[in-house]
Length: 225
Image 1 (tube, rainbow, N blue to C red):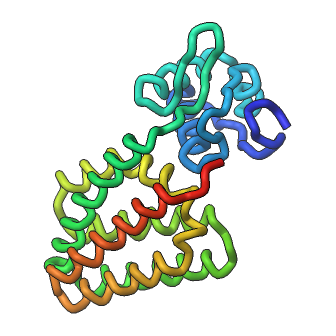
Image 2 (spheres, rainbow, N blue to C red; image 1 turned 90 degrees about the vertical axis):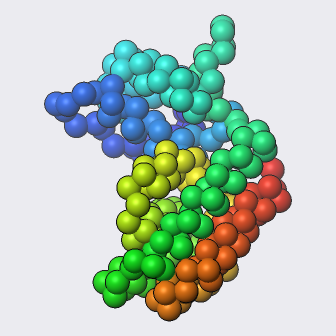
């Protein structure tokens, strides 16, 4: 195990050609979001470059970009470390998420057709299957797709763009509590689908608000590493 905490072979080599620095950035951001690289973890340029099959230069550029965006902390004479979010940072982000997603649920109830509702049902079934198999990575990914689908069904481009800005961080905060939320999260998703199918805008809003607030409360109550 390297100091980056990634087992050998766990990260695929990046394909060329293309803007390599962007590919490295996306690969590292995904590893941070899924907590394969954990908050506070030391990021060694040479080891990351070896994992990704690239030189150190695009890794350095990616780390600088991640630092600008608040994902990585660059400490003088120490190097790069995955940012450790404060409780206040998480709370602010998850509060904004509640506002955005509650409105998306309301609009989805007003606008969704049978095909959209069927897509939500399918995603919910996949999420329930992932929980049953204790596949946290699949549950987190399917949860993100479910919420993205609700946002799509809302039909508001500006709302979707705002939600996209916080989506990665929502996944970052959701990952450590996904197992705790477990089947209850998908029960709440089922309730949301029912409200959307009934075109009950107020109920959809209330269900989504309660759902996202449950996640926020679970995050704050989580066991610390």
